[in-house]
Image (cartoon, rainbow, N blue to C red; front, side, top):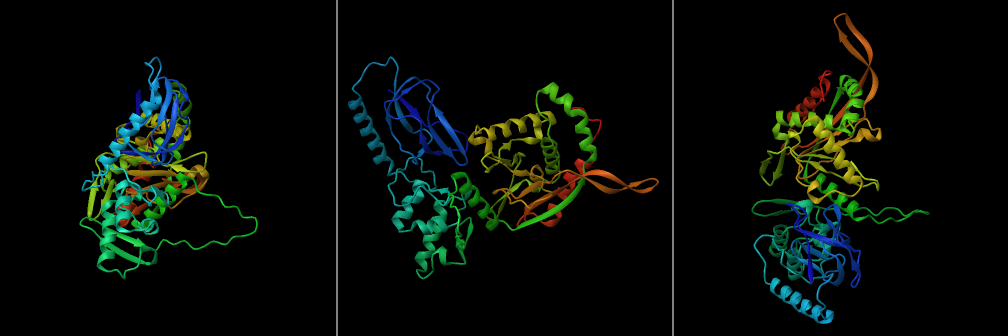
Length: 446
C-alpha cells in the first residue's frame, strides 16, 4: 500500500488546506494524475499521484489543514499482492488514532505545532485567515470566542494570530476583566516581550440594501487580499511621494530594439523589466528602502527580491517575486517577468514564487491610470506605482533657448512606511529611479 504524503511545497510552507478531492475512494488513478487540490496562502495546487493504482483510503476531508510530511491517503499500487481492504483500512485507522493521541501531548514553546491535532469550536479559517491548531487549542481552553479571535490583529505571516498575540490578549483580560473585548475597544494596546500590537475597532458600517442588489460572497483569495490591505493600513503610516519622469529616450530605444530582440530570444520585451532594473539599481543606492520592521528592530535585507503585482483573469491580484533581481541581466529579467506573469495567469505559481519579497512594484499604467497611491505589501516598507506613459507637450531647455516639444512622460508614485522611511529617503529614492529611466543609454545593446 503506497502512502501519499503532503510534499514540501517550499522553504517557508509548513501546512496547506485541502480545498477539493478530485478522486474518491475506489477510483482508479494513473501515474501523475491529480488526486486533490490544496491551498497554501494565495496559491492553489494540484497534487499528482506518483504511482498507478486505485485510491484505497482518504485520511483527511475538505477544509482540513495538513502538515508537510503527513500521510494524506493510501493508494493500492497496480500489481500489488491482494489484501483485505477492510482489514487494511482498520489497521490504518488504528494507526492514525494512535498518531492523533500521541500528537495531542506535543506543544512546544513557539508555534511549531506541526504534530498537534485539535477538535475545537474555533474554526480553522475565519475572516480570511487560518488559525493554527495551537492557537485554536489555547482559545478553546481559555474561553476566547471566535468573534474575539477574529478581531485580534496578528503579528504573524499574512496577519495570522500567533500564540504570543493570543496569550497577550488573555493576560490583559485576566488582569482587568472589565476591559471590553476588541470589538468594543477603539484602541487597546497589548504588550509582549518583543511586540506591541494595536487592536482598533474594525467594525464595518452596515451598507444599504437597495432593490435589485445582488450579494456576492468573496472568494478565498479576495478575502485574503482584503484582510492584508486593511492590516497594512493599520500597521504602517503611509506617505506617498510623486515624481514625473521624461522617458522619451527609453521609449525610442525600446522601439528600436524590440523587434530584433523578440525574434532572437522568442520572448517579449515589455517596459516592466526595464522599470525593475532601474528599481534594483536605486535600491543599491538606498539600501534602507530594502528593510522590514520587527517590533522595535529593523531587518536590513541583503537580497533584493522584487515583487511585481499581477492582475489575474478573475479580477484578483497576486504578487510573484523575482529573487535576487539585481543579479539578472536585462534580458534575464525580461524572461523571468514573462514566465512569472504567464504562470500567474495560468494558476501555475508555486508557493515559493510569492514568498520572500523585499520591495514591490505595481504598474497602474496598464489600466490607463496616470498615477496611484499603492498600499504597502507587508512586511515590506515601500511600494512603487508606475503610471501610464503619455505623449505630452513639455518645455525643453536648449542652447538656443527654451522650446516646446512632444515628450513621453510618466508619473512614479512611491508609498512608504513613515515609521522607518522619512520623506527625504522616500523622495530621493523615487527620484533616483526616475533619473535612471531618464538617462537611458540609447546605444545600449541587449
